[in-house]
Amino acid sequence: MYNITNFHRNCDPRIIQNATKIKIILNPTILAIESSCDDTSIAILKEDAILCNLVASQSIHKEYGGIVPEVASRQHLLHIVPLLDQAYAKAGIRQEDVDAIAFTRGPGLLGSLIVGVSFAKSLALSLDIPMIEVNHMQAHVLAHFIDEPAPAFPFLCLTVSGGHTQIVLIESHHDMKVIGQTLDDAAGEAFDKSGKMLQLDYPAGPLIDKYAKLGQPKFSFTEPDIAGLDFSFSGLKTGILYFLRDQQKVNSDFIKDNLHDICASIQDRICTILVNKLKQAAAQTGITEIAIAGGVSANSGLRNLIEVTGAELGWNTYIPQFQYCTDNAAMIAIAAKYKFLKEEFVGLDASPQARMTI
Image (cartoon, rainbow, N blue to C red):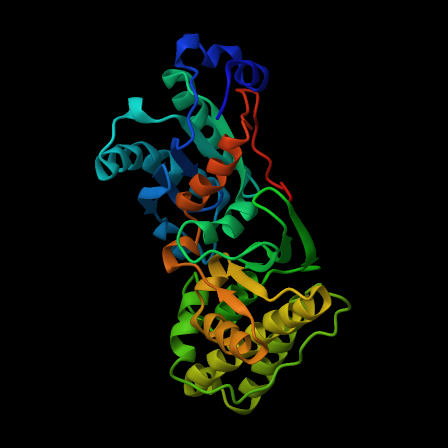
């Protein structure tokens, strides 16, 4: 619930024009905006249900072999208003029914974040309703609470994406601690950069996953020797680069002749690096509630390995639906709900934080 005292304390006073609108709401309707990278997404949560979760992707980046930040922000500007209209229609609600606006404050590309944050401010101001900031990485973790079954506290979550690789210890919806993270490159970046070496289109991660199913992990790559629960993928990328270079000296068609097996070998090594660290974290903490989240959690090899490992070690494993793995506003909405119930609102002075941490 929220009250007028906290509302005035945490929000810009211009957002309130009529104090009678402040009322107790235990099951809010929240409109959420996600624009941290190259996907524009809007979701609407009513009570405990996601009424819609719409995503507009940006295929234009394939032309450049990677995300161009300036292009991404301009694409968000083109997508966000039509997507909002579609969201209201899909959810079957009016904008007057919305109790709060949630938005991704960070981390992410600054230009992309600016579009979402600015749009959230304009909506909140026009509707006289509060705003809720959400940490993108915390939202990936809390995506597990969109559907049942949800993990029990405490649990460990391996959060893997193009920009982040972390092991997070979650004590509650509001209490999270990173206990392991990459020292350099993220797992998603390792997939995409390896794909670039193989001359695959961007984003290469899904293509490596696709071709890996047709091959066998017959080529070996060294697992980095990193102390503790941290990760490193820069050395692996270099190892793959040198391996391909040496093989092509002998056979110029090596990649073409062995594409499926190369993809299977790269995927196998990245996934085993991730899961081996997760096994170490579970052994150290004694926690058997294990989850994965983030864009790379959509990888079939990682999902299968987590399930197999979980069965062997007696874990209870949790893997989100595919639509909640990649960047999406539904996870922003569910994270915002828990903040709404604690009256954690922000005002119009909220600004994007490209390097926001848990």
